[in-house]
Structures are given as structure tokens and as C-alpha cells.
Amino acid sequence: MELSKLILKAGYTPKMLAEAIGVTKYAIYAYMSGRAYPNAKNLMALCKALGYSEKTVLAAIKEARNDN
Image 1 (cartoon, rainbow, N blue to C red):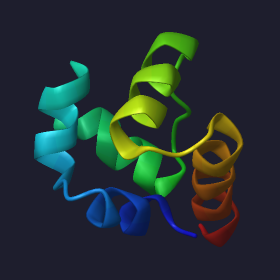
Image 2: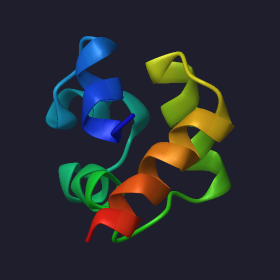
Image 3: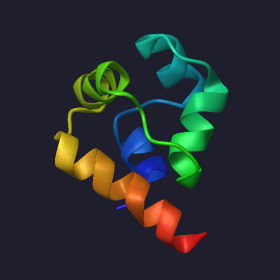
């Protein structure tokens, strides 16, 4: 599943998620497009905020990377 769908399912916009985990909205967009992976700290924060495992979040980022 795409990261954007995981974000929306969790009730966030990219900007809201960025504020919730302490990164810029540009970082969230980079993760969503597969241009960047979060560091360990940000990955844990993403997983906690979204309610998904590390494996699911990383698979969503990898899927976006493979689509581009």
C-alpha cells in the first residue's frame, strides 16, 4: 500500500504528520515519493503515528521508489 494511503487512513495530511513527528512536510513528501528513507528515529515516529509496523512503512516507501 502506498504511504500516502497509510497517512490518510491514519487521519493525517502530510503537513499534519510532519508536525506530529517533528520533520518538515518536504521530508514527508520525499518519503511518499520514495526519494528518501527516514532515519531510524523518524521511522519509529512514523510507525507510531500511523499505527503500522516498520516493515509496512518501509514497504510503502520502497513501492513508491519502484514506481518512479
